[in-house]
Length: 322
Image (cartoon, rainbow, N blue to C red; front, side):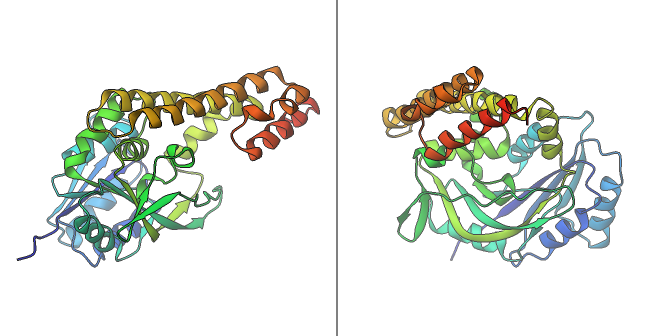
């Protein structure tokens, strides 16, 4: 007799009344019944909580739970706590404002059940761009085809986060690894921790098709954080972003060195160190604000695009357009 696949969906909410019903509908209408839905609100001041509670009661969703944090945790900690609380074999993080395709859970959970090597599975997405939103172009991934399954391999192009948290699924027995990464990394988040830990263990895979409509608008908590960080000049933001990338890379490097069971540690550490060196050189060159110094530093760049982009931004700064 074939083993039953159990799935949980965990959703962190905060002031999401504008789009929450569409998301809830897309969960309720999944072709595979969800065994457990846990929704945790982080102190909304709008009608998010009431709308969810009414939806659960109206649709008799006895396996859905609505919780309210006594104090605001922030979306990062809220999601991590939910991942640890969920009890099913496969866990799906869910944002409050997207629309899932009806067969998302069925396709992703089936794929994971057929390949025990998969600890974290990500998919592609399509977009809705709303007022104030900007496109988040689907980034290409380098994969290796292993028995019809696309493994995301540990190469420079894949090291940094390439998919938002709303297209993930994780095995329950891998959540501890994800939590270990989150707890030791600086300014991490659930998607960064899922991506980095699974990539380090060579257990990150791709379902190469869209499973959600990813809503892009100017009201999300992450979007507001980004706007706040960009209050510095665009030029300084560029330098600060390179330094933040190095913080993430250093966290991944420490995780690989510390964890047992990770293969090819030396090769992975060398890739990370090379990326960090490039970022440090770029940040130092940008700090000098010299076009000439960048022009004669082509060999210090990993990608031609970054080389020409940095020249362009220094020109803009020198012309007073930043």
